[in-house]
Image (cartoon, rainbow, N blue to C red; front, side, top):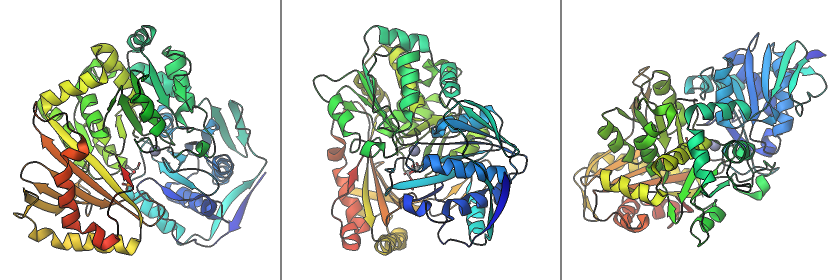
Length: 542
Ligand code: G1P
Ligand code: ZN
């Protein structure tokens, strides 16, 4: 086996976004594309003598990419790679393995909730030794490296057997193929009261877990059906497939429609949940009631002390700026700090590492805690189950009590997808230019109290992130946020976030879109969405 140095040339556009480098699969499969990016990662973080974790969500090209990455790690002098059997690891499980084994980081192959397949999306991201996504300084250095790269190193060797658990060597590097599920499932047992949840299932509690033919299937079957005794068949779409069975593994009411339909049918089970391509996102639904991610974060934070892993209370709650302020009200009631960070899980890393926040969440179906450094779909599902088991109430009853106590932050996100980038940029530029003149203006019967472009100073390292999204705040507590997605692969996606606060107990039972109607109209008027983009209505509403 010899390490070959292969001459290459920079390929334009290998710039990682919020969640690593994400492109159409054929682009990733193009000559030297994967190789250049992986070499750039190793050139920046250093591979000599290091140990890494490797795994992915099982999408098309996952298996081939894993072999390339292993051979490149060996040629670059890595000491050891821990890889999930079949090159499978959910993102939270990879984060856990990085931390558990005190490794130097990990490479996760995933395009998260984007569809997979020969003509769909693929992605690669690097996580640091703390288990969390590489910070911008590191991903920027990787990008810079891709612009000057002239060669990559790869071992000429037969493929590694990734189907069999056990240790082998590749050149001078150790390859440990591990069960992708076991360590993660053990971690969950340390956080949650499995006996109480098992007793609830034994009494007939019914659940549907939709893994959307993506990575959480094996995790869900092991934890829910085997360890917790949920009825067999609780987990559906539980085999990870290269094309996710044609599903769009994005757990929201639009894409997890089958689950939504079941949960709103006469035969609905007590609880439903879905997760995304790489297992870091979750959607939870009660019988006949949808739980918005912002509400889910607030309810989890308010009840976390009921689970053994959090019985000592929370140190703080962090949410991304566009996430509703429902969690802030819980933090205030608990007398703990609330943090508002830019969009992207990596901004929670410092708060978690510094012990300032215990639970974090984003409106984009992401919730998690300091047990790993990624959001964690099954973790959220298990915390919900733990809370349901202890409180013995329905999801609907728990939400009603929550809103009666804290008030309700009506919330929705409207996505306008695949807009021509120039038009979306022009719209945001015009809106940003109008911000200084907005305060005091009346619109749709509401008064604008402030308008700005969100900037964040990290309380731990003092770093500043600017231009993180336009915020228009109203005197009655309503809020409009607009920003462009950093994870799309086609044109620009405009995200419009809408929020309105109603103090309990009056007016808590409206439909969110109805309750938000004036806020929605105000957003269209202020941003001129139709005039700039030609779009009257969103493509996806969550
Ligand atoms: C989206 C979500 C964001 C999440 C990210 C990665 O990013 O909005 O909350 O952290 O995916 O899962 P966006 O496309 O909005 O930049
Ligand atoms: Zn994901």
